[in-house]
Length: 460
Picture (cartoon, rainbow, N blue to C red):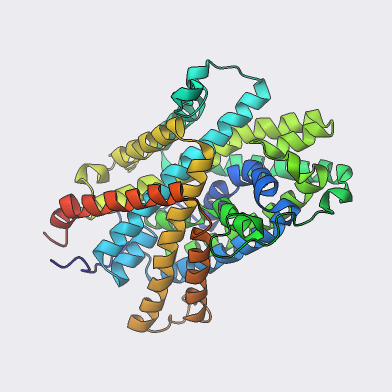
């Protein structure tokens, strides 16, 4: 049994339509990154983890994500393969490691979509003061009388239906919503600066730095939770089969979207903690809440309306990415072949899209936002560790990139630094998050040995 057999999943030949350009990819990345993190997690992060010093947490998280972005960019430039990190690791480490990375990405996208949909539901309820029946107004908790949170389930099903129509149409719709989203954030900045009280920044780091290993709070704990805010940039790598000139467009899309997202997160957090004392920001509609607290109700309503529509962009981007991930793995035989079937006209992976939507809807309906956030981050950190190790092995096996290909500087120093940072962030989470993570890994191992290994195309 050779579980480390390698395969180069070249995307030179594809059944899909190559219609996406760098602009589409930047919008895809921003659609995924600028969502619940900026509208919701910024407030929670300031209130519970870091106070106004959350801006330092964001810079630290952006640095950690940026390192991984460099590795993604080099892999995309040198190995433009289907499946993002899954495809890269298949080529350098072999099938089993690739499967684990692919499974973790499926878990990441599923949980991220669910978390965003939950945040979307909170904005909708706050905007319209909705009073739904208790049984359908929260995640599964019979002791509180809640059994399913129906609002996020409905939005995920709607997004899934949209993605079944046409990829270019769905991503075009996504780009329009991303622009609308940024209009709300710019409005918040312009209005908010007039209500900033410098005294709110006086207790700048109330929780201190925390501990790099196992701290769970402070600036470093805030960096671990704000890592969630940048998740989604890797969704760009899953679009390789539908991208024109992927060796250039994908690195540009990753780096461009990361820079823009980081700048907005820093500015929004600075204004947010200046307008409202950090102690009062433990709410799920932080940006709109801040505007309402200073009497700018009209601006708060606009932000809420835009958030209601544009948080959907994260669901679109990540459901798109998750469907392509499931499609790519299925095409290699590690998941049932029925999941790699494309529609005749639009060339959409129909069954993979439906499965991605149903998994996310289930998680959104029965799991709390906090549980989803931590699970998303720990899954992502785990496969980013594999990716960092992969770039070291790629250099060892194939040497430095050729002229015209993207080159990550300071290898192996930066990949080793990335591994250390990711491990440090992983230790910030509670035992229940680790239990869920370990259970997910056990399920992955069982699926591989019970189905994937013998049905792999390499095995055939």
